Structures are given as C-alpha cells and as structure tokens.
Length: 230
Image (cartoon, rainbow, N blue to C red; front, side):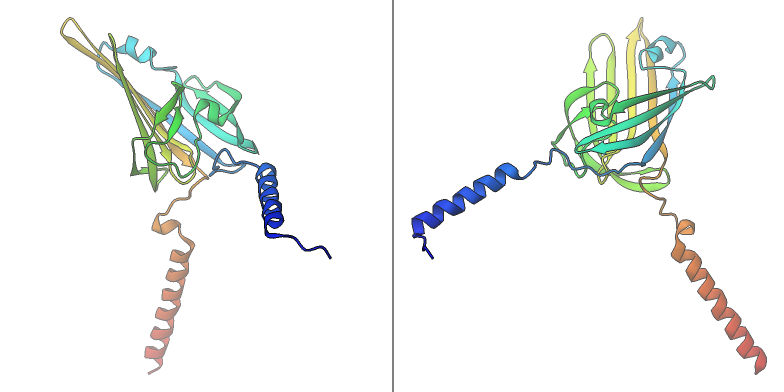
C-alpha cells in the first residue's frame, strides 16, 4: 500500500474540507414556527375628536381582525394564508410570503439585528431591545423595533416579535399633527390575542395542577377514613 507524505496528506485534507464546505447547504434563516401554526390579531383604533381623516391614513378602518395560518414551509420560505375579517362580516383570503410582509422573522434575534417592518414594509429596521410582554394570556420575551418620522405629520411605529418563534405579536401605529393650534392624533393597534404557537401558562390550565388537586383530594379522603375508624 502506498504511503502518503505529510505534504500529500495535508493537500488531501484541504481538498476534502473544501469539498465539504461546498456541499453543505447554507441555512439562511432560523425558523421558530412550523406548519399549521396560527395566530389571530384584533384591531383597535382610537382618535382625538376631529382626527378621523388621520385614522384613514393608518390603514383600513373597517378591519376588525385578521388571522395568519402557516400553510407551507420549504427551506427558509414560509407561506401564510391570511384571513381578513371586516366589521360588516365580510372576509378576504390571501396567500403571501411571511418574510416579505414581515409577519414572521427569524427566531432568536437580538438587539441590532435587521428585519422587515410589517405593514409599512421598511427593510433593515433594527431591533432596539428585548422586553417581556403578555400576549394571548402568556408572558413572552419579545424583541421590538421603533420607527418615527416627522414631516407635516408625525408617524410613530412600534412592532413586537416573539423572540423564541419570531412570530409577530403586536403593531402600534400613530399619526399626529397640529393644525391651527389644535392637536390631532389617531392610533391603530394590531395585537395577537389567540394562537397555538405558545400555550397559556395560567395555573388552572396546567395538567399537573389537576393532578395535584386529585392527589390532595385522595389524601384527604384517606385521612378522614383513618380518623373515623379510630
């Protein structure tokens, strides 16, 4: 059997490693959701009297809620089915790329990472920080982005994303302006209220709580029987 010199062996190792690097697929996104995950968002709006025209500039004021359903995940492409429900009871159905509209971002992002801001679709919006907030009855660690712009009207925008899964949790949009010494302001909030992505951690919804209650009940019955027989 032919023996390799040190230089020949080193060249062989370099060749194998370089080939492996070429063959290994690159992961462009850390996905924290899965197919059949869903989330429902309620839409609320408030205005100062006389600011109704501002509200119209913040989106469809007839929108009551919308729901996103993850229908397909292929590689790093997530396809969403969006159900939009209006105040008059009518609904619309659309299929979109989750990343393109910004409703889902990569999981486990940190301050300084860039994402697409949903609804206003601004690319390279930087995550400003990480805090705890409650959604659908669950306390979650969320990343948030802050954007603002002032011309004739001041726009203030904030969006929150679940850190672990990357799913959108809330968007808050406001417009304000002063006209003839009168202040006008309108606010629209899109907030996650129902989902199967994370479960409620309320005590009464935990299986072990009911198990504990059952055990305590059995112990009490046994103690009562023992005392009674004495």
